[in-house]
Length: 435
Image (tube, rainbow, N blue to C red; front, top):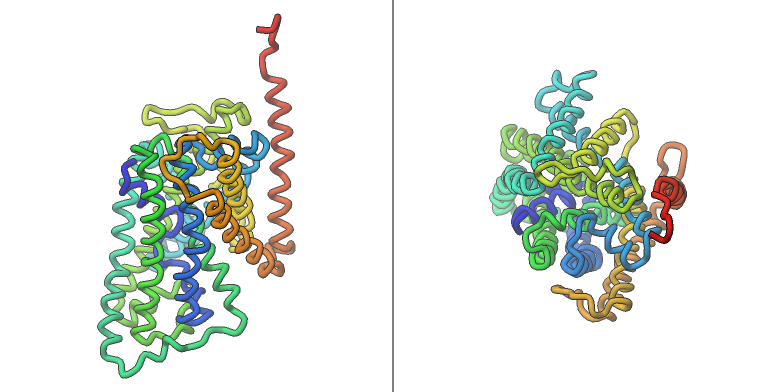
C-alpha cells in the first residue's frame, strides 16, 4: 500500500465518517465540539506518535503483537493479540448489521426476515473476496469508498452554511445538553477516535513503512478531527437543535434541510461505511492469527498465503467466526469496546517505553520525542481509560456488568496461552543428541 491508500484504510479502521458522533450532542454543541477538538490531543495524537515510532522501527506483520512480544515476552504478546481478536467478535458483527439497517431504509423488502441475514453474510463474502486480492486492493478501494462516503456530507455542510447565513441569530451554539451527559459524550468521543493501531498489522505490505506510517498516522488523525468537527459546527451554524440528533439522525436532518435526495445519499453513505470499515478491519485482524501461527501459537495452516501474500486461511477463519457472531442479538456497549481495546493500548504504550530503555540503539526513523515525553504521552491515554472504566461501571451487557464481562474475557487470555504452549511442546519434534 502507498501512503494515500494507507491513510484511507486507517480512516475506515478508526472513523468511517461522521456516523456515530450524534450522541456527543447530548452534551450540547459547545461541549461536544470542545471534546472533539481537545480529546485528540490527549487520546489520538499520543497514540499516533506511539504507532509512528514503533511501526517505523519494527515494520513487521502483526504490528502491535510484535511490539509487545519483543518488549515484554511471548506471554504478553499473546495477551495483546487475544484482547484484539476478542474485541473483534463484538466489533465486527456490528458493521454488517449497520449495512443492513441502512439498506432497509432504502429497500425494506430486501432486509425483511431471512433476507437481512443473507445480506449480512453476502457482505462478509464480498469483503473476503476483496481481501484475498491483497492489501493494496483494500487500500485503493478504501480511497474510493471514503470519497463516496464523504461527498454527501460536503453537500450537507454547504447547505448548512447557506441556511446559517440567513439566520438572525445562532442560538444553537449555546444550547445546553442533557444533564450528566458529558461523561457519555466523552465515551462516545473516545470510541470514535480509537483504532489507530489496527493499521500496523500489515506493515510488510506497506510501501516504505518507515516513512509512510508516521505520515499516515498524523495526517489521518488531523483529517478525522476535521471530518467530525466541520459537520457538527455546520449544524450549529444552521440552527439545528442538538436535541434533534440521535444515532442515525443525519439522514433525517439532511432531508429536512435539502430534500429527500440528500437523505438518501446519506443513507447510501451509511451502507458504504459498513462495507469500508468491515473490509479494512478484516485486513487488519486477519494478520493476527497468521503471525500467531508463524510463532507456533496457533495451527500452522493459518499462516498459509495465496499469491497476493494474503493469509487466506486466516481470512476465511475470521470471516466464519464473525459470521457466526451475527446470530447473537446483543447491542455493542461502548464501554466494553473501550475496556478490551484500552487494555491492549496500555500494553502498546508500555512496549514503547520498555523498548526505549532496553534497546536504545534500535533504529527509529521516527521518534515520539524524548523518553520523558514518551512517558508523558503514555500517561494521558492511560488516565482517560481509567476514567472511562470508572464512569461506565454501571453499564451492563445483558445481566452482567460490562466491566466484569471485560475482565472475564481478558482473563481467558492467560489460559489460552498455557493451552497453546502445552500443545506446542507436545507437537514439537524431540531433539536427539543435542541436535
